[in-house]
Image (cartoon, rainbow, N blue to C red):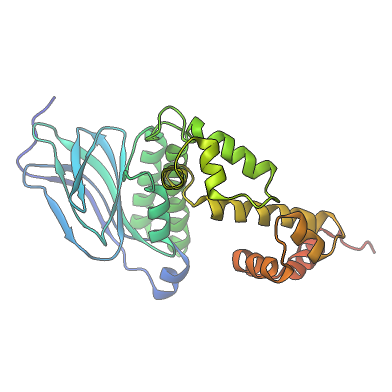
Length: 295
């Protein structure tokens, strides 16, 4: 292995200042680059906006987030949430080459929290070649600065996030072992899918998993990114959507069929998750499915 160079070599360094309108609707790339970190490289970001996503091309390094240190090796990606105290630097004796972008945009904080629910901001098992191609496309877009630049960058950042979700949920980075959804959670998840209309309690689901309620909650959220009750609520709403479109059952009947024994609470929950009432959803979706009149 080649020794770590004394000075950092900057191969690509790009900047962008998005419009306020773009910040509201797009994932915006503020900076991007390609570098080989030298012994002089120790980036410390004391709490400023944005998120840094890096891909390790060669060598290895470390990131520190909130006092905890994580190694980052070749073919791995790391997500650094700049809101937290953090730093990153190369491993001694290892030339750390990376692509990186600093981004901000709607719901980025929530996406970060979901992707790192298992505790680690480092992603193994990614498709390195595909991710590297996405980074290079970002570089080209920022250099060309076309009129559609904001939308094009948004699409590429979304593609990177997709790769991270696929890596996290492919089973190759799970803290639980060879599958992202550990076997202990299979039975409670199956129960929620099959018996969503029943008043399932966390204690019952935890018993199916052979865990205490506290441990079940923690493992479930690490594996799915949400709580058991929230997962069940969303499953019920998905089932309600199907019935609203495919049947003529009343709202009250659909509420009962999907585990809601109060029509008002069902309608409130439905609107909270979809932004429309059950009746509005039914009308909208049926209108979209209606074939056009023929002349």
